[in-house]
Length: 318
Image 1 (cartoon, rainbow, N blue to C red):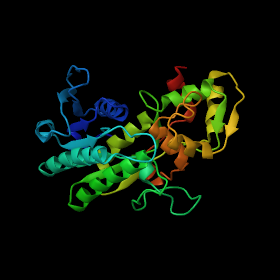
Image 2 (image 1 turned 60 degrees about the vertical axis):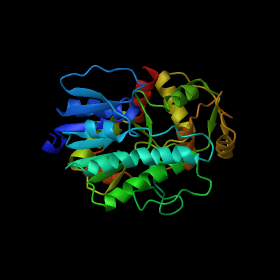
Image 3 (image 1 turned 135 degrees about the vertical axis):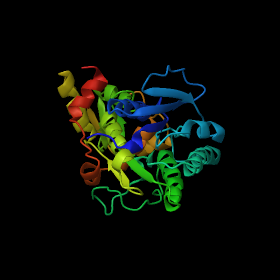
C-alpha cells in the first residue's frame, strides 16, 4: 500500500534508538522523505537523499522548532529518560520527561500536521478483567506495586492524551517488549540460551521491525485519538527458552523459578542478572505478564507479527 501525501516529509524524533531507527528504514523503504533527529552527544550521521539528519533536543524548544519546520508528520519514538530499576521514579526525572514531551507537543500545535504518532508502551494497558486479554481500553493508573517503568510510561502517555483533547492529530501506539535489531531486551535471549533458569511468567514480545511498519501505517492512516496495542507473541519464559533451543539446535535443562522472584528483582536490582539479564523495562513486562489483544492494529494498520523463531534467528545471528 502506497503512503499518502501526509507522509511526504516525516520527522522521526529519537531516530538513533531501536524503534526510531527501524521507523526511518521503513519510511525510506516506502518512498518517504525523512528528517531524523539525534542528540548532541550521539555520533554524527551523514545525510542522504532520503534522510536528513539534524541535531535536536526535546528540552530545547528552539531546536524542535527548526526540526519540525516543513514536516507534514511526526513520529515521536525518543526515550525521554532511562527507566530506573525498582518501583519509584525520581520526581526530577519524571518532570524532565514530561517537560520535554510537552515542548514537542506545543511545537506540533503550531504546525498543520497530518498526524503525530506517539510511541508509548503496552505497559500502560490493563486487562478489563483478571486473566483477560489486554486491549486499548481507557488509560488506567499503575497498580500499587507497579514498576518505575510503568509509572514513567503512564505519566508521559497521560500528557499526550491531554493534547489529544486539545485537538492535536495524535495516534498512540503501545508496543509489547521489542526484540530484534538493536533491541535492549536482546540480552535476555542470549541469557536464556546460555542459562540454567527460567521464570514461571509470560512475556509479551514483538519484533521491532513489525512495530516500525505498524507505526508508519499509524502515521499514514491511523484513527486520530486512538491507541493501538502492537502485540506479537506471549510465550512463557520456558516456551521462549524452548524456541531458542529450536533455533540453536542445542537443548538445555533449566530450573523454573516462581513468579515471586520477579518482585524480588524489582526490589533488589540485579538479583538475577548473572543468570537471566533483565533490564528495567524487560523486568516490568515479565512482572506484568500481559497477553495483548491486537485485533484493532491488525484490522486497521495491517499489523502482522512475524513468527517468533524468525526474530530469534536475527537476535542470535542464525
